Length: 301
Image 1 (cartoon, rainbow, N blue to C red):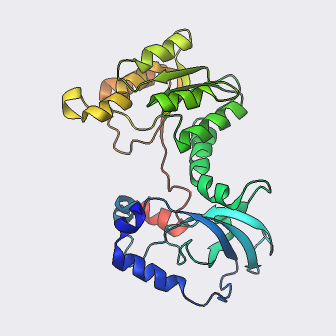
Image 2 (tube, one colour):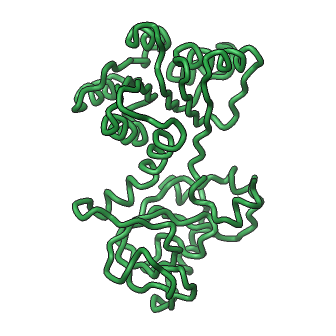
Image 3 (cartoon, rainbow, N blue to C red):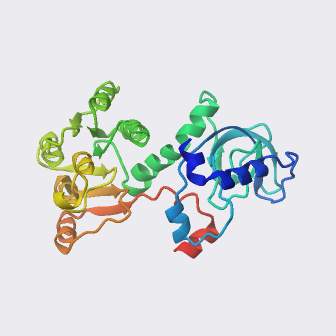
């Protein structure tokens, strides 16, 4: 309901008209796959990113996370064949929304769906799965024995990140934003090393992490946003749930990796100097970085 109200009645009507086209469309590109959609997930449209990239289109695809069956493939497709079960994310400039019965998509935006994963589960988890894998594998190089702090671990992204970190043999610490989240995280198997309840705003995340790691600090931090300013300049609710950027720097260990989702992060010279002394790295997790076509990336970068 949020998505329909956000994109507006006119936009939705145009999408509906787009859906009602002939489903027998051919595969017109050599590297494209024709796909029968079995399930799609409705995620928020990042209008700010679209504006920054100066993408001038009347329609943008909705339901971009898709799962389905391959109907036909182009002459140069090498990874898939008809009847394969696949899952993927449509690029921002896709001509076909995932709400269509049939879509055409470049093979590089698809992967094979595991047999025991349902259509709904595949479409619903692919975006956060890619985000979590990007953060842990590409941006922070998680490995056995590393300690990982995952903020807001009960979120969709957090739960997948916790499982991936455990799979790699890492020690996981996580924060909970409510009593229900805390109880959920405490039921994880293998167990989370420490669940930090930040719902009342009284627990100091940095102190808890340093205590858990014997004062060494954590090796990897995946944040869910950070507080940039003083208490007087930010909303009370945000103050309770998000750590200050100085707390993140304090709890980060030597050679640590901080992966942030805060696109407007600002670090003062003393903050940068502290990260320098620790030999730490800072990486930004952009949700759409893998979903931009080569042309888009060239324009944006």
